[in-house]
Length: 315
Image (tube, rainbow, N blue to C red; front, side, top):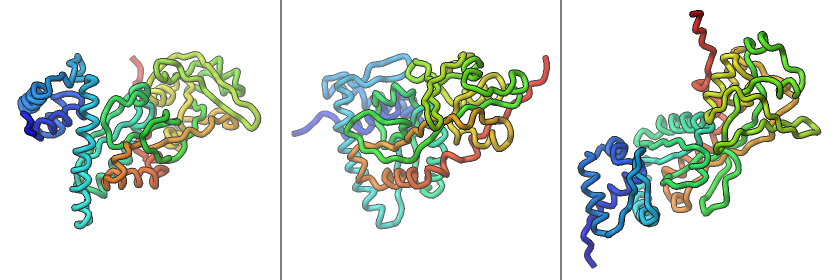
């Protein structure tokens, strides 16, 4: 049976789907936009289906496009696995790895992990994408592995636990000088805080001592959906922050932040690396997964995540 399209048409479709737009695919894969558009149009004409819906922010797969992507990805992944297996004879791996992570604080893991892996595997290229939690859970994108904070929903995806993170209460010396040192949970509840928004809802501050579990709802001066912003406002002395301990390690060491009520801590939150079952035979993906699990503690303590207060002066 003959088909009125070529493998190049399918390759261009995969590149566009993985990048999310023709422009990003052109930049990522060094292919002219006109070439990508031509091959996509020819594939859609041959299949007599629309694979994408054009949106203001890029392209979104139709139901037919999602089905086609799943099947094409499996075929192309098998080809890449075969190529990687051949490359193992030369003790090297190459190709591109697509990693996605939550904007919550996945940045703080994905950056260190990709940097480490790129240094030790110079022939590997990366597509790194950050998504809000609700998009991560919906999973409407193509990826090789995903960094997921918390317990992932049930699915056919494979997962390995990288480690745990915990949260505590923090404030800057400037905040304490202006507002006094909190000595009780009631003091915390009456204070201005920076509140993380998860899936559009404010996240309560869950804290436990040896006997009790409480959920605080401080006065939200800032609602944010990124922990970098939460840390920034806390270091600036504007609010109390409920922050991952690893994320403020260097600020605490430098004296830019102080822990509050250290007897009250969050429960541990697990962090997983998740990947499709067919990637289990992909050497470069599994080597990255191994690195992320074996070196998780190193990655979350990378010093590049330190933020210190900026003095803007007067005026």
